[in-house]
Amino acid sequence: MKLNFIKIFFLFFFISSCVGTSSTGILGTGVSVALDPRSLGTQIDDSIMQKNLSARLLMIDKNYIFSVKSKILDGRIFVSGKVSSLDEKLQITKIAWETDGARSVRNDIKIKEEFNFKRSAQDILITSKLRSAIIFNNEIKAVNYNLDTYKKKVYIYGIAQNEKEKKSVISEAKSISGVEDVIASILLVEDLRVQKD
Image 1 (cartoon, rainbow, N blue to C red):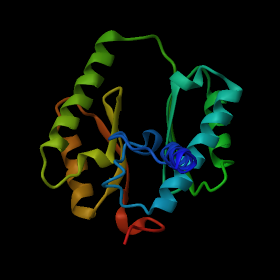
Image 2 (image 1 turned 135 degrees about the vertical axis):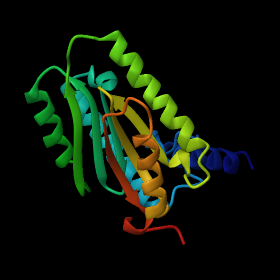
Image 3 (image 1 turned 180 degrees about the vertical axis):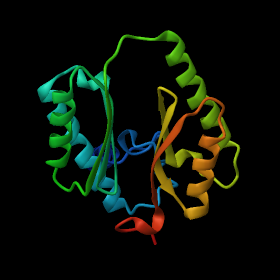
């Protein structure tokens, strides 16, 4: 009896380490497991890719844990953050493309500049307003999206249930006061390799 309990505990521990169970989703992809339209196999593949990419980036520079963010959805890699030089940005792009299973890479990394408190506060406000707008929009599953704003440009990553939802998210972003551009990397459920039944 005790041996079975130990086996079940380790099995649960292994599964929970592969697939996130919190509302933040699969290892930070920002998509809730319960609402994620990807199959469990695809979620696990993305999780493994995420771990491999993160480990390779940390081998180059431990500061990347704070300065570079990556998200993987259905084998598509999205990288954002700030680095000191163009060479670093290109190196990160190369590493992302070399990740086993990579289908595409979107690099939105910026080169570091002097900190500007006013601009950072405006960017945070824009992100907060957009997050609130999509939470209260009944046509949008807000948990399926990650949002970021840099220099009044809104970056949206996520999975839309259909084209209407995708357009609604982009429309909400464009309607926020102060937004200068919207860069959307939104996948449609129908575009995913394997979907839940």
